[in-house]
Amino acid sequence: MSEPSIFTRILDGEIPSEIVAETDRLFAIRDIAPQAPVHLLVIPKTQDYRDVSELATGDPALLAEMVGLAQRLAVEHATGDYRLIFNTGAGAGQTVFHVHAHVLCGDLDEASLRA
Ligand code: 5GP
Image (cartoon, rainbow, N blue to C red; front, side):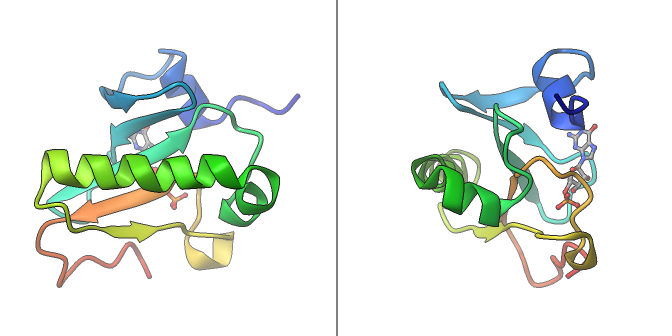
C-alpha cells in the first residue's frame, strides 16, 4: 500500500481544502496556486492510477466521468468553456502522482500551467 497522496489526505480531511463537488468516485477542489480565473482539480477518490495513461487503460469509464464532472463545473463556475489538462510525467510538470485533471476557465490567454 503506497503512502496517501496529498489529494487522498485532502479527501480524508487531514489537509484542509473546500471540496467544491463530489460524486461516488470523484471529488473536486480549487487549485491552491490558480493559473486561471477558475482553476479546479477533478480527482478520482482512488489513488490507484498515477496518471491519465494508467487511468485510460485501467478504468476508461472513470476517465469519462472525470470529463463529465469537468464539464459540469465549467458550467457552474464559468461560461461552460474550459481547458482540460493532464500533466503526465515529471518532465511535463506533474508533481502529484495521483491522477487529476486541471479544469481552467476564464481568460486563458496567459494560462500556462508551466506548459
Ligand atoms: P500537477 O503539477 O501534478 O499537474 O498538479 C498538482 C496541482 O496540485 C498543482 O497545480 C498544485 O498547485 C496543486 N496542489 C498541490 N498541493 C495542494 C494542496 O494542498 N491543496 C490544493 N488545493 N492544491 C494543491
